[in-house]
Image (cartoon, rainbow, N blue to C red; front, side, top):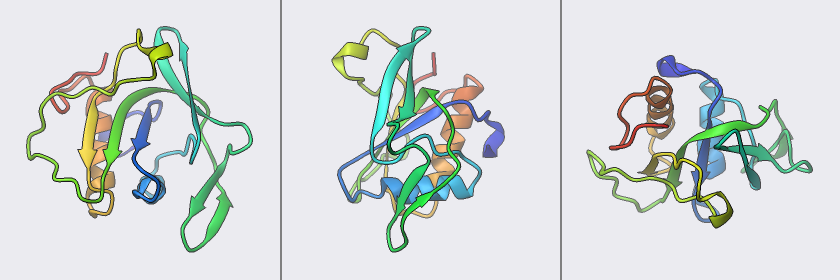
Length: 148
């Protein structure tokens, strides 16, 4: 991964339908990231941490607007280290306050990852995500939160 990060952490891209999640994922993949899932992601607890994996019927597939649904190399399950809310009209603060992603109630006892708010179609968005993930792997400060 760019920025010196390891490749064993999952980044949840969250947002409304059409918010650019697959577009950002595709650009991250072009930078060397591996796809865990597109469209439906299963979250589960293992070893005290929340992990993400693809729904079995969608594993290894991504929808690329204008191209269709294509097969792509995918990663297996990985611990969730970062969540990124993508909003087209977002106005991310220059220096964000600490924010943590809230997992569904059945996973609420697990450590929560940092949550960033980003615009999906800014050219720098994938680089921002890769830099944040790398910092988290190194135990560095990200958006006011440190990965546990």
